[in-house]
Picture 1 (cartoon, rainbow, N blue to C red):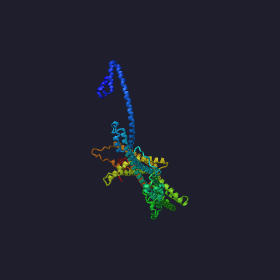
Picture 2 (picture 1 turned 45 degrees about the vertical axis):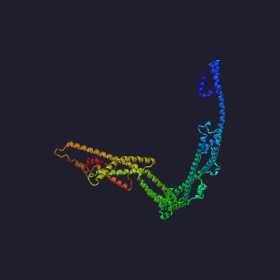
Picture 3 (picture 1 turned 120 degrees about the vertical axis):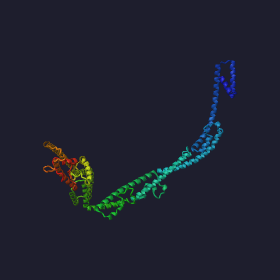
Picture 4 (picture 1 turned 90 degrees about the vertical axis):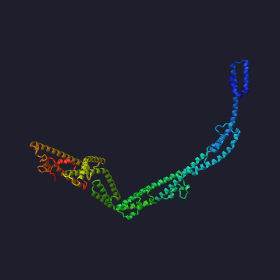
Length: 598
């Protein structure tokens, strides 16, 4: 330890001049004379060192406490100044104060003056900042007052706002002031937008009141007194409640306009219908042009002042009532017109009715006086509506019936075409007939599918309604059943003729085997005498059964076509199966000979 202290003294000459060092040297000499052991010496030196440290520590603590008190006083002054600078946020003051008082590495020994001098230097800055604070508070108060006023106008409680708003003095910076100013500008813009919207609403209310024939002043002032035309624009209410009530008023007026227009259009439609029923002259109709012109108009399209006034609607109601009374005197004529319309609807739907009985019933009801004219017409209108519904329900089936009948007509034409031996001649129009025949064969092949679908649709229709589907008074399913039966008979006839032909060929083969039919080498192979009679007719001169059947069916088909043109009471097409080219050839070359051509 002694050596360590000696080294320290040698390295630091100032320490060597301290009396403490000389005393330590003296003590070392005494220990040498006494012969003190090293252990005792070290122990004594450690004790002396600890006592020195305790003395230094007490002195340092006393000095630090005194210094801390002075710094606290300075810190309090700085804090007050810092609070003002922070609240004002003025960059010029911040830079000045920071340079002299608030530098990051600030220490008392490096300042430009003592602590007392620093405290004295703060006073002018505080005074200037307090003045700046007063001016800034006034600016904040003005901006916040305007914001409060506009917010009150928007909320609808502007009259309830009393006193200046409280200013938050903890933040008086220009940034905060700018934020308030931006908010004020936004509110001023919102006020302008609201004012523009209010004026638009007021204008819309004015237009609607004009069309509806209502008092605009009483309507708009009922929403808010400030909306009167005599009030300045800036004085008009822009509150949420005012805007909401204006929107509700516009909505109510639009709904009233819509209802009135609908009612007026209904009356105008009735008016036109009555005019048409009674052939009202054009001179009387012109008087209500201002009403009938809105028959198909939209709600927004009606802008003429007074176009939907209540007195105008009442006038139209009176006219409709007058025409209704006049209509009662022309009941028979009008009823018969509706009966004709009903009969035309049933005719288009192929529904058979008794028109004479219906007309007699109408005459009896009118002559008896037991039914009101309006009730009779309403009943006929109801019948017409139901007839139209019936037509819609039958439309799909009727369309399929028409396609089926058309296909059967093509089948009939195709059969006639196949019997024509000159159909392949290069005559004029032969290629067109050939194309038609090809299309007809494709269509004829679809007939069974058409019939099956038609039967299914008809049965579904009958099950759904619980009634039979009739076509010109004939049950459609019966027609289809008859068609299926006749078609089956044709198929059986066709098979019978084929079997007969096969049997005839077999007989010819047997005869040739018995009598000999092979031609001699000198005899040409193409001079069969049997072919001519088979092709041209039998030995007894009777025509083929198949062709006789065809002739009978052709006559039935012609009669059926004529009946369809006259009364549309076709039970089923008479010709049901098309004959292909091969079948026609087989018919001609069958066992029973037939005439080659008429």
